[in-house]
Image (cartoon, rainbow over the protein chains, first blue to last red):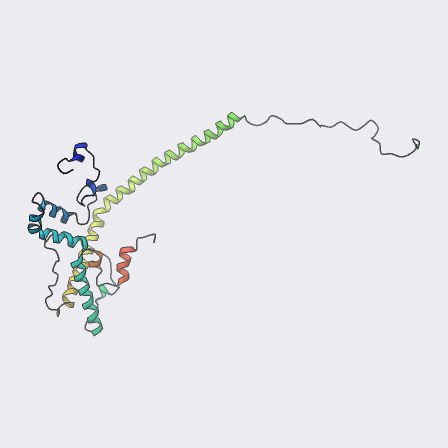
Length: 106
Length: 144
């Protein structure tokens, strides 16, 4: 019910825990995109959807990027393709740290 | 009828010796109650040993966890250094690789914010052999 916050009245938490990632999670383990979601929610709180779409666009884009990692994987793919192309042309040899002789000590 | 001169199979003189033929079911052993008592006593003793050993195991487990907690800053520092080193290597390789690609900004971040974002294993192992990446992601799994 819209104006009757029944769950707060009854003091129960039937589905608030799953409405967004930033709610209290079991064992207080934060979600991976907790910060981005919190930023977006804080930005768009109480201003309505129309305003939020205009004013909180950067936060929303960051949140979506964190969730789906589209731009990140596109960028990584481009780097990999370029590397394979250059290896085929013979202009590039991977350094020892990237060729399997990596020394994984910190 | 033949006389008493025929040889027949007769019992010995004086008859056979007497022997036991009555049933012999002696009462022996412990009573049922005492057997129950012994069983329950052994069980109680076993429970007592189990519970006290479990308490000891709990103390040992707490000690192990405290050792882990004490070592955690060191482990975290090592992990952080490793991540930063891998990111640095990736950045330098990216600068070498994408030199001739038009419109590429080396090390640009895809986010609009400048807070520290924990890198994915894909990012860290992007230029390394694929089996290292798979090892990092799935090497810990014990099931399929």
